[in-house]
Length: 298
Ligand SMILES: [Zn+2]
Ligand SMILES: [Zn+2]
Image (cartoon, rainbow, N blue to C red; front, top):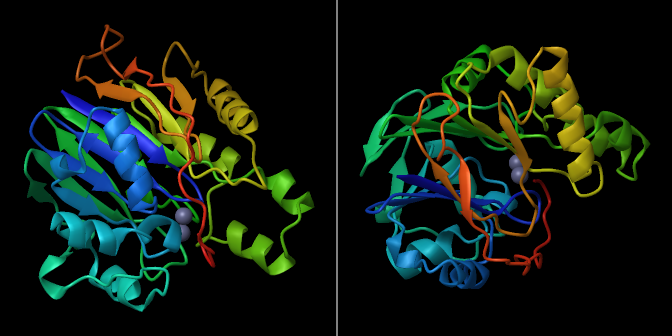
């Protein structure tokens, strides 16, 4: 059974974990390694059960601990050539990756990593490069799209294939426009290589989801320009406009910025039978991930 935990989502640090009985895969490693160790322990897990680390892009909130985890656990790091070059240049990554730990991925080219069939795909954003990931295991298709300036036709196809979807709902447009950010930042965030708004996120889901989509998690919410309840309500109301009812047709949740989720079991059951997307365990964790890094871009 494929399981999923989010250990942090947003500018303070992103880290998502997919695992089975035999294999473990991390997507983005922007959470401090000591914090992550503690979280894993709290879940009865160990960082030594991670086999692969996949990176979306080279902004600090996604790569901060990439060097430390690779060194400490001898883990290969999967990223595009451009993103690896970006990681090498990024001053937020204190420990650089040795050449033998770099694995180069190419958008659109699938790869088999243990039991995970992984396909990276391009996502427009103002990093050196950015990818989303489709991960298929035992007939279950999981998809993650974060830090997306806009939604391309290719991305829409991946949304359509997903049984489980993590997708960015970064900001509320009105909050951003009336908020404290400098004008150039507001322009950057709303540009086609910036971040996805709650409304555009809702439209992307509604217009592309298949009927069997089971669970959507909204990720990478802005602290200043969004609110979890607002993000959820906006997406929910866009979906309703398309005749899609949250709680009946699809489950919808907001990922917390600094608090880990419970463990979700991503079952392959067709339709609304028991066991899919079930949050089996809520360890009651309330400890935040580290926020002790200056983040120039997120
Ligand atoms: Zn980010
Ligand atoms: Zn970013």
